[in-house]
Length: 390
Ligand code: GLA
Image (tube, rainbow, N blue to C red; front, side, top):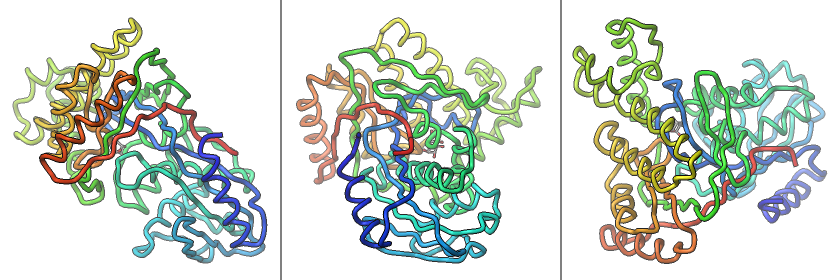
């Protein structure tokens, strides 16, 4: 099993803290976003992968209506009565778990009848843009479904996690992070279509790997920059719905050719924001055809284009991420590089020749250090199996 040591530590801590064995344990991985940035809430396409790091959630039913939740790394406990399940301003890690619990019971957690004792522990670096929060939501959802005997399909679970983000964590995200954590496949990518909520596994082929490079720029999506990007996309879609003679509900319905011809009427910011997901959708579809032919180098070139689009149009990059991508571009064994996830900090995702991993990490680290004085963290990522009960 992946991350066995984390599992063992969690189960031991659970037994010690609650004096019993957990009745259920679930695991959910983080994710990398490979191509298709800010397309999910525009009903578009994404290539992503579940990663080899994740979070475990262990849980047992309570005798009464009390919930006791422990963050296994801090060994800090919070507790509340079912009827008091709500967004909290302190110990904000609890919001991902409690929000998931809340929406598993349609916003009426008192309906659960009895509470639970839960503890979570994981090894996804926090603030790296690897969706540690979605992983926490998905392992919580799976483990709670098990002890309450509730059945939900993957799309339902992803939507429950998304609602937890919207209402308990304050991030108006799409479905990408939760879906990638659920539908990941060992050795492959997930190609998602967020209009129809379909998730397909695509093989990457041999001799290529992903490397994540974590900048030290803080990544936070709850400070309004994410929300304002989403709003601009939705406003732009309304404009195109008026001027195009076809049904448009989301930017998914607009091509880059139509953006060129019909963007008059958008303000400058709306126009810049809109072309990013429109171009990303086109890149994902082109990338799918390239992967089918086994042309990973051309696929990688689309990743570089994606980053340029983030940098110039969506303005969700930052100097640290640009430095990493610029450095990666000079290395022949790097086929593609771009920011991964929301942006504004966090990590870059590189498509690389794994036999050159050391050289790549050394070059990027040296360039980053020369610019900022500190070192980024480089790690090869193994696309891995999605969330499951242990
Ligand atoms: C964050 C959000 C996702 C998605 C990405 C950008 O990870 O949580 O829903 O919008 O940013 O593609």
